[in-house]
Image (cartoon, rainbow, N blue to C red; front, side, top):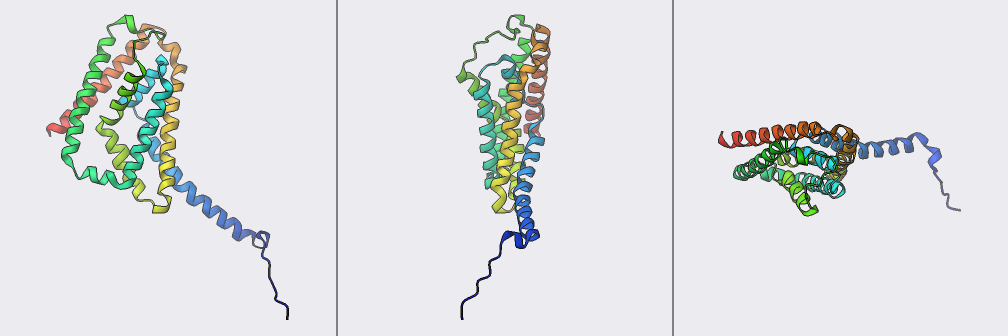
Length: 230
């Protein structure tokens, strides 16, 4: 008696195979879009880091390295939060206090510098070079990123909590989606800033921007100090 083999092709059960494919796509897209949307919602706000990237984009100074650094830094913070460090940071209140004091000092210094620029017309031309080297620009970008306690609240704690709620198998996809939003946002902010260049060909445009920078930075610094005093 000859053995009988039954060959089942994909076309034999099209609805089953299509259902499995759709389910697999949903399992990949759902955590990716969740991470993408949450990260975008948190990052698209007027803050110290975003204003710094915008200003560098307007001046066309070290835009590529700054965009790459900010995107990579966000990705590292997201991975750190999803990895569980966010919960550990929440359990150490003294660390949050130290971060608040350091962040307030830096934001206050930068805010006062921006306020001083509003009354210094000699540095307000778009093509002017204020002497910021790549090293200084990267150091400033690192300070705006890591000395801002809000980045730990948003990127590490909130993203970490949302990522930890995902099934373990899909957490890397969530992280990829969140990091994608960061890279796209910083690239759009840095390279898209030149679209606004006509507005900043006059000193008045720079005065408005620097006045906005000063208000935002000093307000953030004040809020950090207020949180420490409470």
